[in-house]
Image (cartoon, rainbow, N blue to C red; front, side):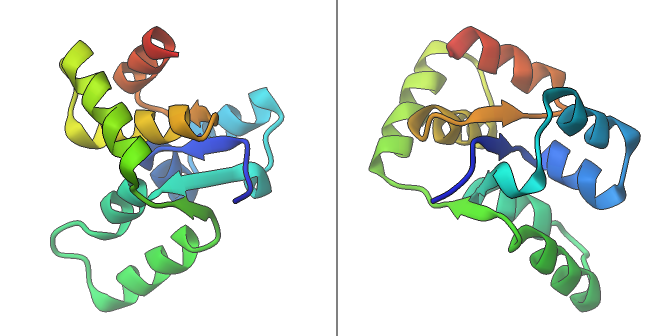
Length: 122
């Protein structure tokens, strides 16, 4: 799998909406989208929200499928358990952190709370 960076759901949504914050996040670090990946959790969160219509769902799938996707596996599972035992953190965030840690990827996020955990844990 390729990529040096892991986008979380907030960053991916920001890119989809073309927010200045999301583009600044990448440009400040000199990151190209081709260097980015997502976790399966980000894929699910990005596409699987209540009330999305079929056309929007297909558009979101197209965007998400442009990135390498890291599936859940036993090392990520075990890392997520360790993270949750150490911090009071939501399960999806723990799985995203575990994916970044397990695959030695730098996390790119617009979520200040998740970034705090990332900085504490890595």
